[in-house]
Amino acid sequence: MPYATSPYPPGTPCWIDLMVPDQQAALDFYRDLFGWQGEVGPPETGGYAVCTLKDRPVAGIMATMAPDGAPTPPTAWTTYLATADADSATDAITKHGGTVLSPGMDVMSLGRMAIAADPTGAVFGLWQAGEFLGAQVVNEPGSLVWSELASGDLKAASAFYSGALGLETEPMEGASDYFSLTVNGRVVGGAQGLDNLPPETPPHWLVYFCVDNTDSTVDALVRAGGNVLAAPFDMSAGRLAVVQDPQGAVFGLIDATGPELP
Image (cartoon, rainbow, N blue to C red; front, side, top):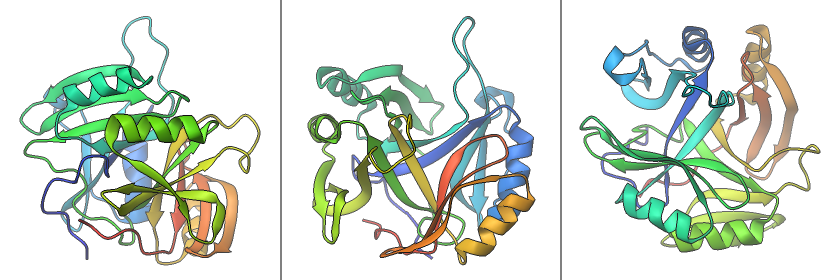
């Protein structure tokens, strides 16, 4: 099983978390679907739950929170990109046309985080590792296997991620409308436009989880109250589906092998 044992190179997707109205229901759902273990965290962390797979961190789940008067955040998975310096990264994000939604803040001694949006509106997080590296198991059933940017202006988004975070966009061989995201020449994710997605789909980052069997996982998800947005279909990388959990968070499923760890 691929384990991460050192900080991810800057620009690499390194952690994912989910904000939901009913935290316990989400913990139960993903436990049953992927075998995760997790419980509501202590008050000093806002109840944040770090879910584990085979005793290693794989994802976070937290209850929806919004400052007084602010709109309620959507129920969605957030992809965090690694950074060596969250404050310098937020400065670069602003300089290159992005928007800092939540400035850098320390998470005890675990690390430093921020939330931002690229110039086309796709929201993502930043994680500067301290004692906590991020996801310590990936590319195995029940864990993150792929991160994908969808943008209405891929040229503008590509220039932003390259200039601000060192994340390069390159044509993917054999896929005319799909691109790879690379860090130091190593593929770490993918990118596409919105043309092939349902109308009114906003720019976003989508997380994909590895599974042993896409069809049976989709069946289990439906029995647990989830929804299917794109039924399982075969593609060059494997058999893929796009689904929603019972509270509306969208994610992908694929029986594929992801990028190698650095």
